[in-house]
Length: 210
Image: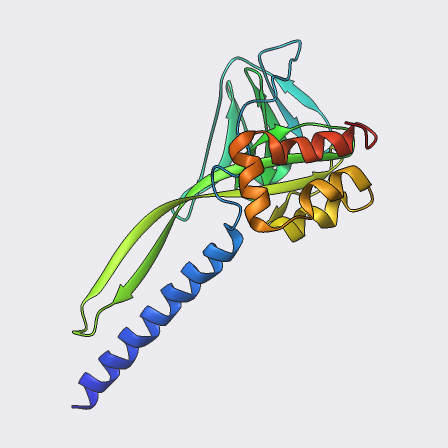
C-alpha cells in the first residue's frame, strides 16, 4: 500500500514538472512562429561560409556542421577543424548568419543592423497531461523563440512579447509607437505586412527614420 502511494506521488510530481515546463515554454513563445518574417537578411560575404570565434577570428571553409544535445558533444566543425560551440560567436552560411545561443546552439539572424540584431530558432517542446482516469498523454509542438542582440558581440536575449520589444526600441519614438498598440492592432498589422515587426527594428537601426 505504501509503495502504491509513493508511485502515485511520483506520477503526480512528474506531471507537475512537465506542466511547469510547458507553461514556461508557452510564456516564452507568445511571439508565435508567424509573428516575424523569417526571410533571410541576404547578407553577403567574400566566402560562402565562415565560422567566427569569440575573439572575432574568422575561419573560412566549404562545409559547416554542428551538433548539440544531452547525448552528444556540443561542437561545430568547419571542414576538418572542430571547435566547442561555446568557443564561437556564430557562423555564416550561404547568405544567412547564425548567432550562438547559450552554450549549445545557434539561431538564424533575420534582422541585421548596427544597433540591434534579431534572431529566431525553432524547437520541439514536449508536454505531458493526465486525464481523470489517471492516463498520461505526451504531446509535442514546434515553437519559435525570438532573440535580440545589442551590436555584433552582445548576448542573444529572448523576447516574449510586445513589452519586451518596447524595452529595446523605446528610445525611438517612431519604433515605440509601432509596437505600443493593442494586441488586435498588432495582429492586424502583421496580417497586412508580414515584415511589420521586423520593420520596427529596421526603423530603429536606421537612426529612428522610416
